[in-house]
Structure formats: structure tokens, C-alpha cells
Amino acid sequence: MMRPAKISAWVQASRPAFFIATLIPLSVGYILAIQHGIWQPFRFFCILTAAMMIHVATNLANDYYDHIQGADAGESIGGSRVIQEGKISLKELKRALILLYTISFSIGLYLIISLQLWEMIALIVFAFLSSIFYVAPPIRYGYHGLGELFVGINMGPVMVIGTFWAITGQLAWKPLYVSIPIGLMVAAILYYQSLPDMQTDRAVGKKTLAVRLGKRGAFIGLITLWCLIYASITCLVFARQLSIFALLFLTTLPIFFKLIILVKQTHNWVDLDRYGKYIRILYFLNGLAIIGALVA
Image (cartoon, rainbow, N blue to C red):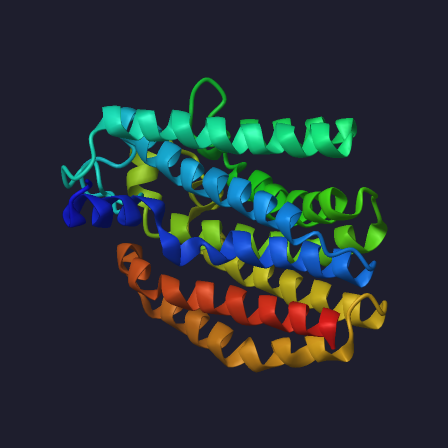
């Protein structure tokens, strides 16, 4: 039996605070499928299980490869820190990665074969490879300023469209439209998380988008990204893809302004890590506004 301390270490490595980044797009895709008159709760359970395993595996792979390449060494505060704190070994992480990827990929193949949705193989393979090569060599796209792009695509359009497709067996335009602000918000979470580690990332050659932009550019980028998010939700309301209920996103503006002020007033950006909760709150509340607009 696993000891409580070990269980706690695996929970820490999984980073449950970020699970909303998977739960919201899957929920949106499922709600859109239900609106087409198709429920399929067991099928959704399979999708949810596989997606959560991929999410956890991506976090573990991030810890594993960043540690090997020295990106989480020294003063870096990135990752879950379970390796640096001696709670989980590299060998244990590797075994967990193999198990999680094997089970999730098997669930994906089961859905494809049982539903005869062979075209979905490309979507699953893209998500699978994106998860592995975020920081794994030789691609390491997260080291080349492409992390936000691929994470936004995978946890926005891929998850929303993929869920809708697997439940209904068909494609539609609305899941794509609604997935845009969701993908942008997940990208914003990753973008913000990279800000405290800009100095240490630069030192090891990890050229995240924030590192490429520099401190001033990264600050402007944060504002620009959230302006795009709010604008995309507004456009969906005017295009009648979302009900007026989605305009409840306006209630999150004070949180956004507070975050921007905090970032502006923080001289040592390593300290920004303590304010990460605000970016997750923004995602959660705006995600609820989108969900509410779909069911209202």
C-alpha cells in the first residue's frame, strides 16, 4: 500500500489546481453534444478519463525532461518540484509516464474502433505527440516559444471538437467557434506561469514566448492576450453563438485589472508565482460564463 506521504507527492506532481484547464473544454464539448440530443455518459467518461491522464502525463513529462535538461535547477520555481525535493525519483516518473500514456492511448483507440471514427486518429496522434514533445527532445517546442500556441490548440479546439465529435459522431462549426476563447485562456495560464521563470529559463536556453518578448513585451503580451479573450467572447455573443449570459465575463474585469496592477508593481517577477491563482480564477469564471451561455 502506498504511504500517505507518497500519495501526497503524486498529487503535488499532478498539479490538480490546473485540472480546470481540461474539465472546462471537455464540459463545453459535451454540452454541445447534448444539445444535439446525444448524451452517451459512458463515452464521455472514457473521454474524460483519457484526457485527464494525458493532462497529468504532460505535467509529469514536463518535470522529467525539464529536470534532465537543467531547466528546473537552481533558483527556478517551475514544475511541481517533486524531483528537486526528493519525493519522486526519475525512474518512478518514467514508469508513471509509460502507464498513463499507454492507458490513455488505449482508450482513444477503443473509441475510434468502436465508433468507426477513423478520421479521429489524426486528432489523437496530434494531441499525444504534443503532450510528449512539449519539453521532450528532439522537438521541445516549449523551448522555442511555441508552448502557448500548441497548448491553446490542444486544450481549446482539439478538446472541444474532439469531445463533440466522439459523442455525436459528426463535426460542426459551433464547437470550433466556442473553443477559441477557451484555447486562448489556457494559453494565458501557461503564459503567466512562464513569467516568474523568465530569468532561469533564459539561462538554460529555454526561449519561451515571454523570454523572447522580454519583460516589457511580456507585460504587454499578457494584456493583449486577455483583450483577445474578452473580444472573442463578445464576438461570439454578437454572432449568436453564445447567449447574452456570456457577457457575465464583464464581472471578471476587476480581477483582471487587479492582476495587471500586481504584475506592474512587482519588480522581481519570481514573486509573480504567488499571484498565479488570479489567472486560474479568471479562467474558471470566464469558462463558467461560456458554459452558462450555452445552457441558458
